[in-house]
Structures are given as C-alpha cells and as structure tokens.
Image (tube, rainbow, N blue to C red):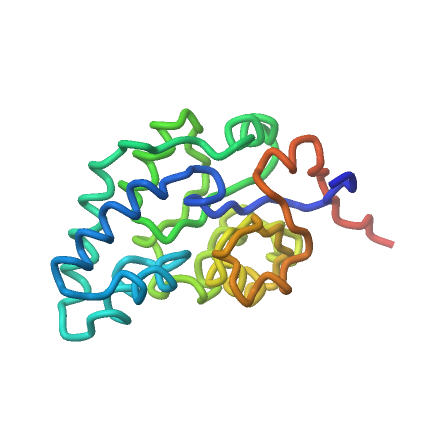
Length: 215
C-alpha cells in the first residue's frame, strides 16, 4: 500500500489489530463452551468484535449474561500467556505521538489496560471499552464516543478493524475503515476502504487531514 491515508484521527480496535490475544481468547472461550455444552463451531463466528456479555446472550440466553460476561473478562484479564503485539503495532502507535488516536475495544477496561501494558503500548488518552457503552459493536456507540472525545467528527476518522461487527460499527458511525485481512471481516470485507495485513502496512502512511480554511 503506497498511498497516504489522510485523517483527523485514528481509532483502533484492540484485539486482532494492536494485540494478538487469540491464544487467550481461544483458551478461555473453549473452556466456557465445554462447561456449558455449547459446540465450539457455534461459538467461533460470534466472538470477533463483540462484548462478552452480548456473545453469551446470543449463545446461551438461559444464562445470566451479565455474570457470565464478567467472569469471562476476569479470567481473560488474568491470562497473558501467548499475548503478543501485532506486527507494526508498537511502532505505529509510537509514530502517532502528537496525532489524535484512540482505542475502541469490546473488552473490559481491565483487560485492555493489562494487555496494552504487557505488549508495551502506551495507554491512549482516549480508551473506550465495554464498560463505557450501553451497546457494543456493531452499534456505532463506541466509535462515536471516541471521535467525540477526540474533538473530531467521525467522518474525519480512520478506523482500523479486523472484525465484521467492528467494521459495521465504524461504517454506521460514518468513519472510513482500514480492514485487517482475515476471516474475521466476514461479509463486511467489501465495506472497508483499504485492506491491510497488519498495522505495519500503515507505518508512514497516515497523514493529518486539516479542516479547510474558511472562505
């Protein structure tokens, strides 16, 4: 990818974009599915981009989604085995120093901050987590909140996402999207403005978009 992408700010998803937490997610959710006799193949499509509480509600409406979701987040926060930074993630966030950027994640604040510290990415000034919204992705609430807290119109933001629910949330917010190639994009793969393989593809490619001067 050679073209410069101009934006007023960048809004990152966390898991699958900045941090590879797939070993933990796989381990924790497999154990949960086995405990509740839910076939793993039913779980996998509902994991990317969603809050734990909403995934539980979809898979097991007979359970207390709030309690189950909170316990899943607690276990994931405590488990860092296999966590690593996605290629180029640390370098890209360092390169964006002084540039407006935020993280919008479907995980809890505790999980997000623990993972960011584990991989060496500084906490952004704006971090929107599952704890900060009433509706998770694909609702645009998280991305709209992040843009507002950065003082930007969502249309001036570039969202970096790897999940179908997240892409749909970004689109509903009015933002442009760089999608990380993979099965997680699902049917939303055609909705992204540019496809990347990792954050490394964005190094040196994000330029600041300025509002036009008044006429």
